[in-house]
Image (cartoon, rainbow, N blue to C red; front, top):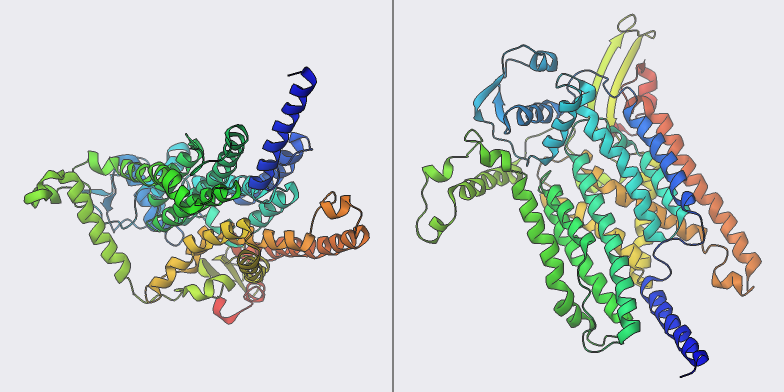
Amino acid sequence: MSATKAGAAGVEHRRSETEVRERLLGGPAETTGEPWWRGWVPLLVVTAIGGLLRFWRLGEPHQLVFDETYYVKQGYSLLRHGVELATDSAVPTPDALFTAGTPDVFGTTGDFVVHPPVGKWMIAAGQWLFGVDSSFGWRFSAALVGTLSILVLGRAARRLFRSTLLGVTAAVLLASDGLHLVESRTSLLDVFLAWWVLVAFACLLVDRDRARERLARLVAEHGVSGPGPRLGWRPWRLAAGVSLGLACGVKWSGLYVLAVFGLLTVLWDAGARRAVGVRAWLAAALRRDAAPAFASTVPVAVLVYLASWSGWFASDAGWGRRWGAEHPATGAGALVPDALRSLWHYHQQAYSFHVGLSSPHPYAANPWSWLVQGRPTSFFYEGSARGEGGCAAEQCSRAITSLGTPALWWAGVLALVVLLWCWALRRDWRAGAVLAGYAATYLPWFQYQQRTIFTFYAVVLVPFVVLAVTYALGVLLGPEPGASVLRSGAGAEAALRRRRLGALAAGAVVVGCVACLAFFWPVYTAQLIPYESWQDRMWLPSWV
């Protein structure tokens, strides 16, 4: 073969791989044709601003807020003893609890706690860094992961939508959500659950692109026969398994995410095999991809989850730790170590508590109301009269209300309709990916409508609400200049006009969300304001 023919064959070979990549990825996995800093610098600026909002006067108020009274003390107990021990109920304040030199207020028996330890270990990390009696310290980890979530979501959105503009938009929307802001400034567990779920989702997006790039290369080199090629080692999916194990180690609701995301990654692989021409594509995915997907997520998540209980295993003082030894098993059960049987019994008791929790609470909220933020949770409220604590009005208020930014959440309801439409009629995988997030983090709560649950649980849903709104804004914007309709010159003027109008509408939504955050800022951060100003921010009677 002549050099000319060999060169032509090489060009044809590269072209075939490019065509397969185009079919599998719908374009390059990363936005190309722009310098690296254009994708990073705006996103880092938004993250820095979001971090400033989350860390500004983080230690105020210097007292335990809402359920911090449980998790801060349990984090301290983990730091000091490696396991949650019961506290002396006669020591109610953080200063008395944590001041150096005071007697240890923890007993010698384990406290019955109903959530796994990962989130409390993350709280304890801040206490270890800045001191156990520092309110900044016990909220530090929440603010840190809340800030990093902005960066991770921006990168995930950029990859999902193949657009730097939409990636930065998603970051701005997350930075300006009030529910996420408040929980990033409060030492509860749900923001840590939201963090690990988001990390897992981002890892699976990278895994999807990497797997499809490898499949394109293998198909271009060897063609397609039978079920298609094996895709081999997939470290990003393994990282997702680790993240999902940590999510379950914060709260058990991470189990639903593990199930949905595990199914999602297999369906993505099935779609990839179908796109390259595998005839029995679903059977091929079950044969080639289902078992590796299971192995890199479920067993990994289980091992990580069990490892998170290492302090409980290492101690004799943990709640129920000696139950297995005190209740010997017979038959096949005797093959299971007493420690694992004890942990299983612990989980049975905790599960019974969760499903049976129906105590009335003034801020309980049915999940039907979450998407419109019908009943936000008041984390802190303090009223004062003129002259008290700097109050210059007749009456003043300081409040921390876990209210999602109304402009974002109400737009999110419309965006959810757009998602469903585009997934059902256009088979847009991006819409399906975001809907999977809704399915994993929101729908399971409808099983427990009689249980005492709260709107602040929805912080784990916030990234997917943001992605939904970002997707809808992308639909408003339309194709970018340089898309095929513009390259051909057909309808160029109409397309540009549509994009300008879409940009105005999308910009109005983003500006509205930021303005909403600014307006509600005082009731997100316990600022001292006149009582009338607090009332002005309670738009719905159910918010009071």
